Image 1: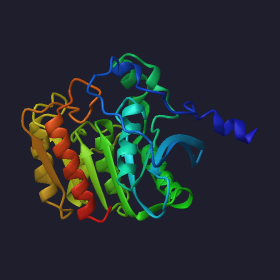
Image 2 (image 1 turned 45 degrees about the vertical axis):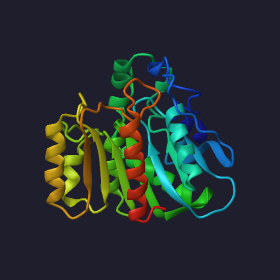
Image 3 (image 1 turned 30 degrees about the vertical axis):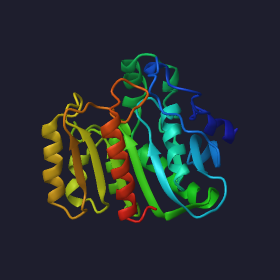
Image 4 (image 1 turned 90 degrees about the vertical axis):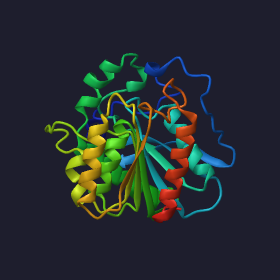
Length: 278
């Protein structure tokens, strides 16, 4: 009976296959990374009320891999996020993307973005996300050959905001890289803080990668964040790419900008190396 009670909280028991419905049709320029030489696929992360699915990729041989948490967009851990994990694994990392919306619903089968936000994303508490990421770090160290003394985190859009917040929540993170995550917002019971609120006291170095033509994240909020970071001592930085839209790394969507995406990816890897995630 106890197991049944626990399982009822876990709505999404497995990851999406392919791309989320809401992002189709997929762009012809989509990047596909194979799993040759890798151990890649779905795993289960034990949490307080059961388990959540996650995508894990790492080299097929070796151990003690530097570990990167990969945090999803609002579309869940669909093919794009899984591919990013494989890209990291090809470079010698253990990359793991836990499904952050597992209790709230399966966004991969929703075709309308507003439905995703109203029915699922808006109901996900930050406290739940922080706890699940803590559980993922623990699992990586105990069950997946991860070296969590070399721990990084990166996230996209919704996951970009979470990257800033988790870097504040867990000072054991070596470095973070936030891709176009919202910086300023209204405090609610489920989302009490935004990156701007934690910036002055942040100790983990976070690199923010943002687009100057992002219609979801105004440039003035980026400048507010830069000012707040300067009041602290985390050595965090923000790069703002001119004339670049939201989602510029998302090669499966029309927002993809190859030049900026490749530059930002290389800057992320250099940031991780600089701060001991390598």
